[in-house]
Each structure stands twice: as C-alpha cells, then as structure tokens.
Image (cartoon, rainbow, N blue to C red):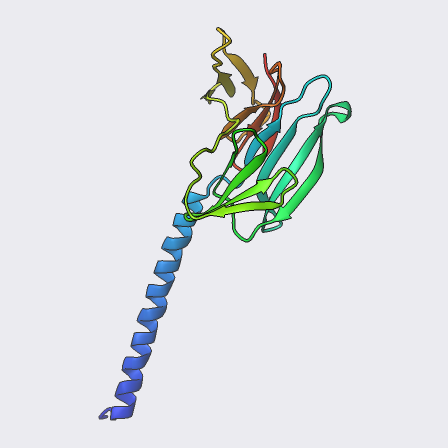
Length: 202
C-alpha cells in the first residue's frame, strides 16, 4: 500500500520526536549526574565563635532541610549536652556549593553558583553580592588525615607535636571537614557528607 505524503510526514515527525525525547533524556541524565558529583557534599559548616568555659560555640551551617537549601546559625549549649539551638535561619534559592568567613569572622560568604557569592551577617542579613569569588575568604577547617581501617581522624596542629585523634567508629560515613569548637581544642565538629558529628579529641 502506497504511503501518502501526509502519512510520510507524520511518520518522520514521530521519528524526530522520539529522537528528541531520547536526546533530551540523555542530556538531562548527564547534567543531573554532573550536579550530583559537583555537590556530593550536602552540608557545609564554619565555626563563628570557639567555645570556652564562659561561652558556647557558635557555628554557621548550610544544608538541605526537606529539599530546601538553608543557612542556619547554631549555638551549641554546653550546659545541655551541646544541644544545637537555632539563633537565626534563612532559606536560600539554590543549593550551597561552598561557605567561608570574612577575616574577622563577622560575616559568612556563601557560594550559590559559579558566579553568585552572597555575604551574610551573623544575623543572616544580606550585606553584599558578588559575581566572582571574594579576595579574602577564610575557613575554620583544620587539615586532617583519616585512617579508614581504624576509623580515626588524625589532626596535626602546628602548636602540638602529637596529633589529636578523633574516634569515628560509631559512624560509617567518611569525614569531609574537621573544625575545632573550643579554644583549648578538646571538642571538634566533624562534617560528614550529609551529617554533623561532635567528637572529643584525645
């Protein structure tokens, strides 16, 4: 049976549509896998105030809360088993790629996109926006080595000859960041891929 011009164009149209759907699916899956790779770490933290006998540690945390990116300032209550008390919080438009601190720890820089940096105050008011990385961004992160077999974190500090060790045997995830939470450094904040853990140094 001879195919009419209308049927022929309809057949080619359907084939073209199928090709577009397949191609679109391929591009989307590649793009989403790249995004997952880029943002494998879903939680970031910085220490704004180190704790002492007189004051509680204060930290800034960027994370996902019920599929919504948020930036939260927590005070860790020493008198209540280091309960995470929310001081300030703000919802963000995009998932956070990186956070850092200004030199005096008075502000928190948040990278939301390749060309989108936002400076927040300690009370999470927007102070400034930039399209490029700020010239001076500091971090409270400490260098460390992780012994996967013994699940121990070794932290080498310049002022200490012997490294401090943190036991992570209660947690399966690998550490991503380590921050000192106190002036005399016995308490540490360990950032995992999707969680925060407090650890005592020994």
